Image (tube, rainbow, N blue to C red; front, side):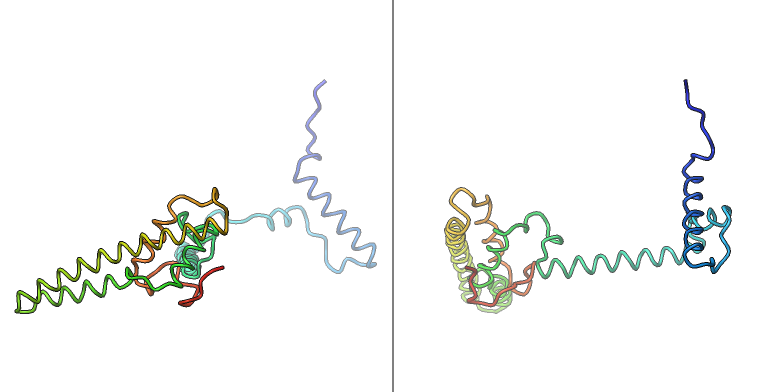
Length: 201
């Protein structure tokens, strides 16, 4: 036999009954209500919220403000190296260890951009010999920086194996270290969290 739907068992009726019970209980405990019991119509009006804001221009401005604040928090969090704001490639204790090791070290690669600028300036010199020497020097410095990055990758992997275990070293950490070492220290993201010489343990 199907149960008859009774209006008194609907969620709104149940909420109203509960509200009445709470109000009556408060009145009984204090001896007076202190304010008139709101009617069902008043309670329903209080629960209603507009689906579309009345002032759309203001709502859009507030939304833009919230988005700008969220972007600023994400930018600052990325610069500080906070895990939740980092892209996937930078997450994890091993990647953090690699960043700290690279930032504590002085690498040839971080001077690549300044050297390139010097070579570009040298190409404007009237002496052909000076231009040739500058270009050869740039290629020599480039090869040294690559060799230094390869050595850095080897050193980082050896440290990670010692700290996390031989079979726990993540793939790509050597490349990750080399790419960070080729960037100017002031341009690295996340920003360096250690000073030079402060190698992670």
